Length: 346
Image 1 (cartoon, rainbow, N blue to C red):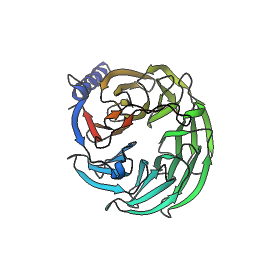
Image 2 (image 1 turned 30 degrees about the horizontal axis):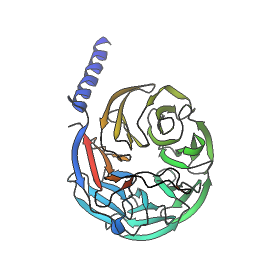
Image 3 (image 1 turned 45 degrees about the horizontal axis):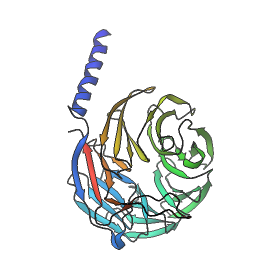
Image 4 (image 1 turned 60 degrees about the vertical axis):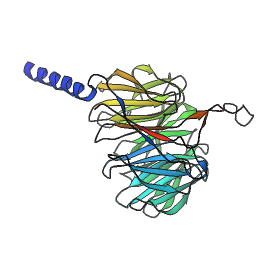
């Protein structure tokens, strides 16, 4: 038994050395990308399609598609007002992209990247995901405070789930349950993807404004990033109990990813930090490092094959003056400066 423990410990040590080397995560590649039509410079969620080795990058009026290995642009999906996220249904060969300003979900062909249809959603349609147990697509509508549920085969709306506030990043547990951050009510909901019933409401205090989420599906742990106060917390997905002490993080977190092969959890923030943690056990998370990226790089995608992470950003100008409609204006991205940054440990 002692020899077995020593062997496991040595394996963990070697794994850590292999992953991090002397310097941990570092910039592997910077990829300059063309300006979107109409100078669309907004950017949001990133999705890595590992089987197809493609990376989808939200970019305002278009969606850039890159080869995950060569970094070459292999496609561009156009015709949006302001897109946010993408969900893929490989069995149907279809992709679904949210257009928040148009209040629609756009359907495209995964081979040709041509748009083939559109589905009415609701105000500020934002995050989107495919849930494989129910075989449904879920579009999370921010200012409408609801979820549009879509039959991807028929490209039609099945129903609408009302929510207590603004929904943000969500995860599926692989067993039919969806967990979603509700930013304005400071809670996580558990939604049955088949019945469309909300089964639980879990408060996130001392966290506030929960935005980003990832999940260790094997151990039933949710990793939740909050903007006010700026914390990352770990939650038991079955009980809603918070585990351990919260971790301080940078300003305006927007995405978390979890890599089950390495046990690494990463959270990206707009201030230009990527916080890296390791899940030592289901009830113990350790800080590994904080990586300096670039201002604005708040959304992130994980490549399960290389264990690299992708973020996007641009150059920014000053925030416009405050107005009654916009009391908290943000720095404005400069057209023609959109880029992807790839960080890895090799």
